[in-house]
Image (cartoon, rainbow, N blue to C red; front, side):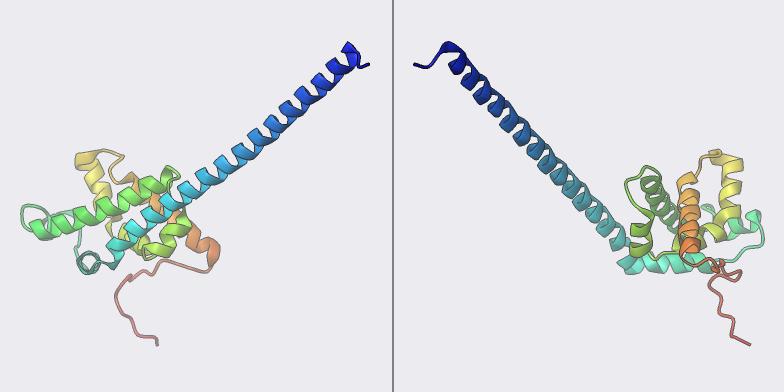
Length: 186
């Protein structure tokens, strides 16, 4: 005859096995959930990078970038006379559109929503560095006169991070002094 203690022992073993199976199932479920979250985040990141790439593949966007890079001025006042909103609304709009696009990318980078490698691979790499180098004196004057010290801070951040990224890959890299002006080799 089976005693109460033996039945109780079997019951505890079955209960312990049930708890062990539940714990294993819970751990497996957590792992699967983490994997799904990681895949979702990667998919979202790819989608954001794809959206950023659309700009760079747009003819008008690229044209605006090159026009901005070819603007020439002596100082802030000369810049305003040639490209300010009172005299050249189109130039102001191009600059504003480009600055906002680059600043937005910089904000996403600073917040950890994008990786610098993604931006390098999908948005023309050094374009933000060139834009920052060319327009830094103008942006700094805008900060001083109108917008305060945080104006286009993420454009500046993005350019700095991109330059660090490029220099880490190629320590000999230097931003060209002439930027987009052709100078034949001697």
